[in-house]
Image (cartoon, rainbow over all chains, first blue to last red; front, side, top):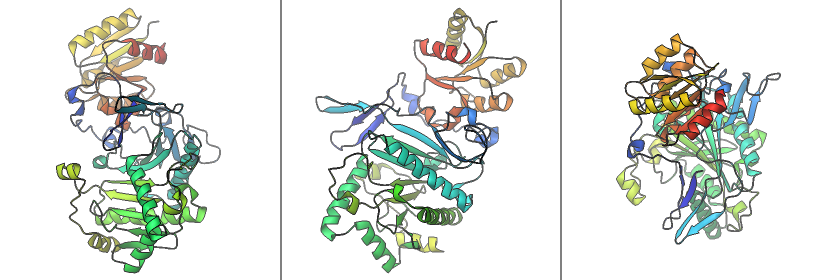
Length: 339
Length: 117
C-alpha cells in the first residue's frame, strides 16, 4: 500500500509508493526503450484489449462487446496504479508528521482505437466523445465522496511524461485537495470579496476587451495566454458561462469545447512543430463532499483548462524560488497563435 | 504435465536461485541471461509463462516483452524488477503482473500459481 504524506511546512502532500527494494539507481533516468511503433505492439491499440484491466466505461459501436474491439473511446483502471481504491483513509499523526493510506483512483482514457491518431487529428465528433468521457468518469468517481478531488489531465510526448505515443489521458482522484488547487480556491474567494465578482469572469471580459493575449474567442469559450505565464505559449481555456465544475458542461458546450480544443492543439502542432505538452482541467472539489472552507465556492471559482507546451526546463532557480523565467511574452505568443 | 517457465535475468546468482526455488515448486524452469537468448528459446520452445527482469544490458525487459507480443500475445508474463519506476511506463501493461524484487520469493511464486496453476 502506498502512502500520502504531508510536508508540514509547505502543506504539500506527496504520494509515496511505499514498496520494498529501493536502490539509489532506481532514480537514474531509464534508458529510453525503443518506441512501441518500432516493436509493433501497444497495449492501448484496438485488438489488444486483453492486455488492459477490464474497461469501466467505453463509447463503442452498437452490437460490440465490452473489452472487445469496436470502441471509439475506452476507459480502464491503471494496471499498476500509484493509488488504489479503498475506504476513506484515516489520517495518522506521529508528532509533527501526518500521513494516510494511499487510497485513490487512477484511470486511463484511451482516446482512440488507432495508434497514430493524435487528439487534434481526430474528427470533431470523436473529440466530443473524449470530452463526454471525461465528464462521465469525473461524475462517476465523484459519487464516491471520499475522493475530494478528481483531476483529469493529458501528457503528450515523452518529455511531457507520456510513456506511450498512443493518444490517452488520465484521471487521478485523491482523498485530499491538492495544494495548488487549494491555493487557487482560497485566492479566488479572496478576489471575489475584493472585486465582488468571479475573478475568471473578469479576466474573460478584460482579455476580450484588451485583445493582446486573446488567442481565440467564441460564444462559449475564451482562450488566452495568461498575463503572467510560467512557460512559453502557456494557454488557458475559460468557459464563458460561469461554472465551478467542468461536469456542468451541456451538449452544446461540449461541441464548442471540442472545436476550441481541436483548434488550439492544431495551432500548437503547426506553429511549434508538434511539441510535447500537458493539459489539465482545474475544477472545484467534489461537489458531493461538503466544502465549508469556501463559503462562496460556486460564485468565486470558475473551472478551466490549462495547456502547457514543454519547451523549457524547470531548473534550480524555478525549484528554489518559485519564480519562472519565461523567454516569450504572452502577447508575442498570442500573436503567433492567432496566426 | 509440469508447467514450463522461462526466467530472464542477467544476474547469474539470481538465475540459479529462481531455477532452484521454482523447480522445487514443481515447475520445469529454463533460464536466459539476456533478451536475445530469451527470444531464441521462445522461438524454439513453448513456455507456459515468462518471468523477466527489466534492466538488462543491450536490450531491456520492456523491449523483450514487446518482441514477445509480436510472436505470442497469449503467453503470461511477469515483470520481476528491483525498480518501481517502470510502473509509469504503460508498455509494462503487456505483462500480466509487476513484482518488485525482494529477498522472499513468496509473491513471485504466488503470482505464478495464480497465472498458470
